[in-house]
Length: 348
Image (tube, rainbow, N blue to C red; front, top):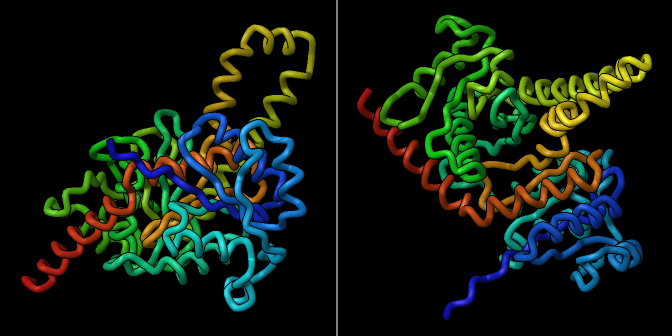
């Protein structure tokens, strides 16, 4: 009987605010939930080994030693120029060389994108890679991109982001026909910049086969009616940071209100189950794990300030993308869409 190849992840153990402890602890949680993959830790052996000995599931995990790490303050160009022996570069290289199936890092976002793009290369037909992640909504979770890789975009970029985002959502959720919208300052067709209107007309083309709902506004990000929201990296990154800030503010205000008086404490006791469900639904750690879409390799970016639960979720995202065959699916989707768009250009 044919044996299925075991999935293998490369983890940048030195990336993030609380590395390597957060990385090791998160990996231990992830391994406890899923025994069907191996992990290789890239970083300082003298710091990683003692932490591994305290884990439940990772005692014999492989370590690739390097004393160098990318600094949070490094620019992308500095990291690429000086970082060929860093934990980030080497963990990405293991995926590019076929030694691992995906890389996960909580390190410097700009450096991770630059190094991943340089080593993986952009997929054929993709003009720019994008960063995508899931958001909580009042319904099911929603995917949004770009979240900061491209501050300025044109119509072609946004159309490709839509195709990438739909494939990403489908791969992680199994939903066959995710509906998507293009973020704008209003829903009317005449609103927004010209490149937005051009992108909208192309996305609405029935030949592309996209479940496109038209322009959407900021309020639509969380109303649960959409599966994918497409925008440029400038607006997307602001939306992401705003959502994280609102979640923290809401949790803080709720905790403060529930501790104001004996009556409020009794109210919390009676409603604690419902409040726990709500807190879990909006917990940013459950949505941690942004993905660089449009590259010939899987790189998952964990929030640098996350804890072990958040990092475990980033690992879960990476394993699911590999297991669901994300790269072949998105490559085929981009090739199909570009063929249609090129043919229409020629016919015009």
